[in-house]
Image (cartoon, rainbow, N blue to C red; front, side, top):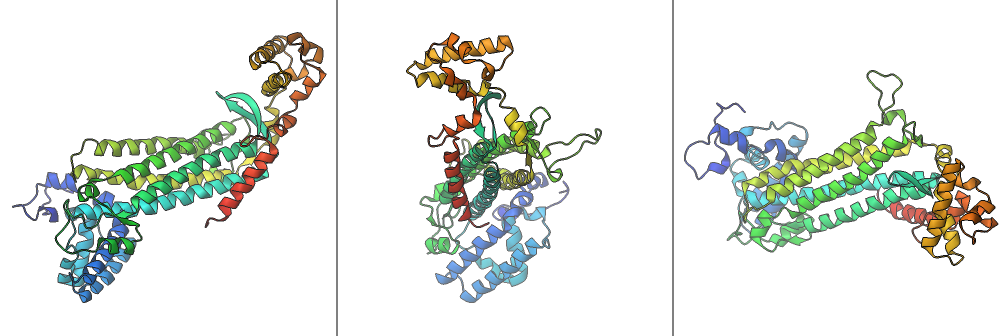
Length: 467
């Protein structure tokens, strides 16, 4: 907006003169809250319908307003409404266009309502919808992971700690670990949705209204579970927005972990997987390159998600009750955060669905016994040896193996007995990775029976969800 442009925003109705263009430029929020037009219109339609039922507004006028608001929604969706900085926010844009369509009847709409409780409602409606969209995207990603896990039930690879080869697991067990993390994310989103689904309408600017509103009826019409219980809190509460951004940030962190594994596993050094060409990019200089951009962007988006959360926490920090204009700044992180999560989850799901996993390379990475050293220690424990003593004995065997440049699996039974007399010839059986997995059947462990149970459980859970 040009510094010379003059405007008189609706919010200055009680003040003399025009607002300074510099204040107007600072105050404009339509570039951010314009995305809430659908929620704003839904709330207005429910509000005016309730006003008519309570005899506050003529029913014929209310019907004209509701019909006209349908048209306004369609015009917003089609990009036919020009966003005008002079109109400041989405509420004013909607009301101005409504006035053009129904004339003086538009003046009925704002009875018993302030922009403070109006925007609080818009945000709550947005949060409810955003939770549903994020949940659906994470569900799609879970289905992709479970599908690939079922295909690779028998594929084995080293599990890692400290990015060092640790113990054998199945690829199915590894992929299901991510499914569990995203399940917790979905639980959090469900909690956020539940707390957000209450209506603040009727709270007014901060102290309600003298008009006989039916707040519960408006909430029911909007599909919300109830109404807020304190008008001061209702117009100044942004907890649900913060909780949504926390849920998005943690889900983005979980996506970044998948992204990091995509980056690592597609390197020549690991060679555990290859991305489909549709989910990789080339180099502008080096023709041989195939870059795992989907994984790198998943990592990068996590930083943005964390930043959105911190930004909103900082905005509301130390604000006195009730509404303060600082809260206008919540729109950009609130609206952008869930959208980024959905885009990232869908891209990662596509990469997982179309990737090629290299089972031979994964099994080769198990090496020649190092990943099964703990099995040798537990062999002694099963024969009554204290674990610390068993751990020390196998540690000496590992040091000997390293010095001799011979894998643990290639040591003879006689050599094992040098390190502890309880080792018998059958210690050599410890160095069979598939046998090791088959003995790990505690609940939650990577044993084949446990993995099969978890696969069946997740397939059943996800099959019940709409796609």
